[in-house]
Image (cartoon, rainbow, N blue to C red; front, top):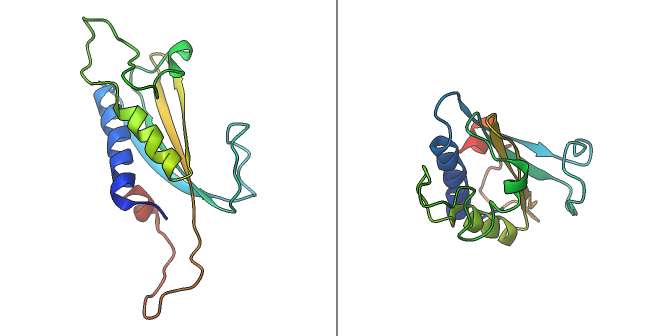
Length: 149
């Protein structure tokens, strides 16, 4: 359970960044539920205490980010190209805010990227299980469309 407005803000930021840095090719947004049986593909060291998590990826075929620059993309007021002649506009706050919002939701965000090949921003959020179903409300399983918002 997350703040819907903040979750949409996070998704919109990641998608708009993908659009900004992808001149040709495509952008894919996908997600699925992880449980104890399918966590093998996650980076080592993520402290996953809950039973289930939602993993969402925003993948693009854009310009990519060099390995040495990937560690700064979540820093405030930092951009990979900080030169005065940089091609892309922005304040360098979008990913820093996204990172903080995800942390406030007890989640995680990381990047996989290859220069000139594209990037995937991954976010992982815990699924909070309701203690009981509210009276008169029918609970239904999430569909693929629900995950893609």
